[in-house]
Length: 301
Image (cartoon, rainbow, N blue to C red; front, side):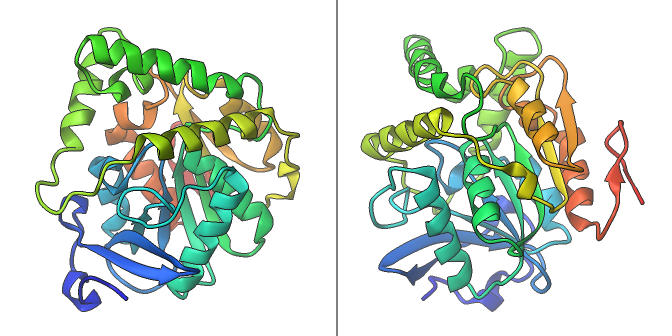
């Protein structure tokens, strides 16, 4: 069941204007948004820790939605989605699969960020053939070195944000320097571009459950990522404190044939700081049938 007529948003290519819809599967009602031209393989976005539908940067979504059917969604128990947040990344991947199948898709492309990238890895490993092309940003592999320290980093940055009356993402996603501070303010401002029908914020309990799930993922036995054979684009900033940048390089080594783009003088939100460069790169990568990226981020056959 959806909250709007699918035909009514077929021409929407701006994430700030994408209607929120719902679909019920497995006893859970999932809230999601879709935009861009219908038809073909959709690009499903997997969001980060504590995030809802309102936390996607429109400067990343919109370039992809210009030519592709884009779907963003809330995991179980997050924002306007019902149910209880799962305690593990594996269960979150199961819920994502339930949602995708409920929409009727047998093949998707994936764009993921941070915790969303962890979920996407599990989904790809558990359901070979579901994902055609995979984008992993600001994320790392199961059992990755120091990933379990995300709990301490997160709470410390939340504290720092509180005493300065700032959004925690300004500290978690961006370096506190001349390049990072203005980029952080601009990012937070872009997240407010949607004026109407905004999502419900995540509850404190749901956030804490997600954080513990990431910690478990970081302390678990590594997955065999050599089994991932889909074209994969990995991106991050070169000074990510939240999910250390070395873990993006680790992913690149583990996933055969993957492409790695690292942005200088940027942190966990490097793709948002460099949205003007990364948006088109991601869109081109997801649009390709074959091909690889050059060192400059352009695609070649």
